[in-house]
Amino acid sequence: MPLREILHLVVASLTLCLTLLLSPLAARARPAPGLEPGYVRALATADHFLQAWQSGDLENGTALLSSHAKEAATTDGVEKFFANPVSSAYEIGRGKLLKRGRYEFPVVLVMEAAKDTRVRRRFSSIIVVNTGNNDWAVDKLP
Image (cartoon, rainbow, N blue to C red; front, side, top):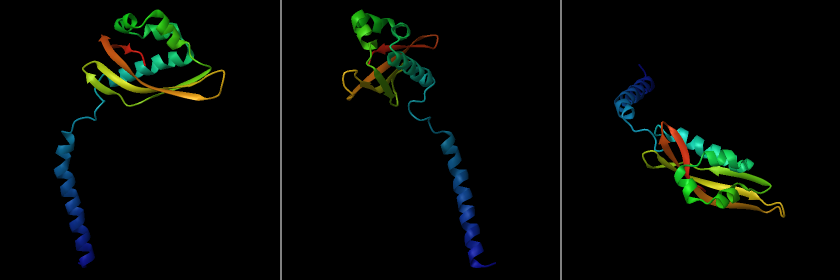
């Protein structure tokens, strides 16, 4: 057997051995941070809330607020938040678990005023909490 074929078999065997040795370690690895069971629902709640903000939908946006957020924000403050400019958009960053049932997502609110075409970006965060029975609500406005 030529030397080249022998080397090829040795490399292939070593690769197979390493794969078999490392597979139990990979099976025991933890899931990536932020992928806990409630993460998807918390992110969806943040997204639905910001969609309501983008469309100026005060009623649906208010329905997504926790009782704590409703108490902390004045009625005028909530109405002012939803009275958005002519054109708006948002970005949601990767959330982090603050504690069980509570996530914080970095957000950027992008707005274009009617009077001028300058675009403003407002950096903030939104906190979403599990209110029970896997229901999620916004606990802190951006």
